[in-house]
Length: 525
Ligand code: NOJ
View 1 (spheres, rainbow, N blue to C red):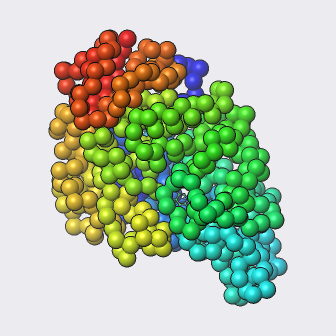
View 2: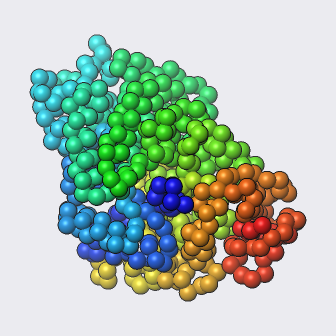
View 3: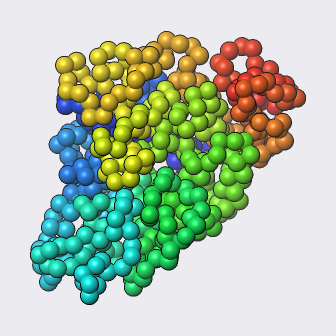
């Protein structure tokens, strides 16, 4: 196993810092809160790496994905000492720490943008994408914001538009200016020098745009996408505002920077591209991103046939020597317990942790926290406010630790949490799940513990095998183990022999020849 890099055998756990653990009583999670829960992550659960969504100073127009300073900590989340304590605490427990890197845009309150907007001849004017209005005063081209409306904000004072692919408070950086790359790499080095183990690259494929800023062609009949509904935005082919081939040179440079550090640093990119070949291009010749996130299962119809097809397509697309990534949920998509149905959460857990490659588990999915419905007019999320039904507050509700007031998320007497808890928090929490030997949390623990002892699951090959209708079955490491997942609520004959290593029922009654309703099995041959 020694020939594998740490990240190849790792299981990543995503922490959304606002929602994990509040230590100050202001209703918002913070960095000391994550540190306080490291024993849960390392020992109780047994994951290997934590990805922490942004904690940088920010006006919070997009809850931290609008960064106003790339090299400090927002006081809401703590101090730089708190960050160092988190990093040290993680490393003491052999956990890796991955931070979010947001290269496409900064906050409009970042000093770079404040300077840039101050006058047309400011030296930093060209650090962002500024263009004159069209003769009728309208924006320079037809590009739309992913959150609704034109992707351009008008600066009244200087009479030009700036590009903003997300909210108006997130201004796209102009990476075609070498000073931008130099400044952004210096800021990234700040964290690498401090000892962070890796980066998750926000909207990695958006960064380089068409230098001519040509109009995107309309797409009257949009195909199903790999992300949630984006309304009008989905009705254009995004030929020119993202996915530009020049991204590849940028990620070769990012990789060279990461590779100049020891121990080895890691990158995982947020890449929503449906075309497999284009998606796989972000591995480069294994000299770009270590992993592009594979989101194909996030929006996959929940059937064994569809899942099997998408896993096969990813396996076929990944270049020789490349490594897969697996993910079912995150802070941008509805909770999996609601999308797949609670009864399917055990097989979803087994799927995520037994496919080939690096799984990323979203906080709270180990408890099957459901999506919390929050009407558009109450949404805090900018996308939820602009496009009813696309809000992301519902998947960002506070972590549920115990049945004390505020679910152990905030100390007693604290302010109301920034988002409401789900209705069933007093039953659905870590403490309660730990008491129940057959809980979903205990299944995650069993799967994670088994995976650690199983080279077949960590690094073995993947092959789909024949299975009865309603079942997805695959082997790892040339048949050393077989995984069989029953998507139906009736028993299915499997006809396999061998030893059951894990059943999602977590009991002693499992047999390799037959799957019980909604059961998943790991069978050693
Ligand atoms: C992707 C992030 O995951 C999402 O939360 C954010 O709103 C956009 N990028 C803009 O940064």
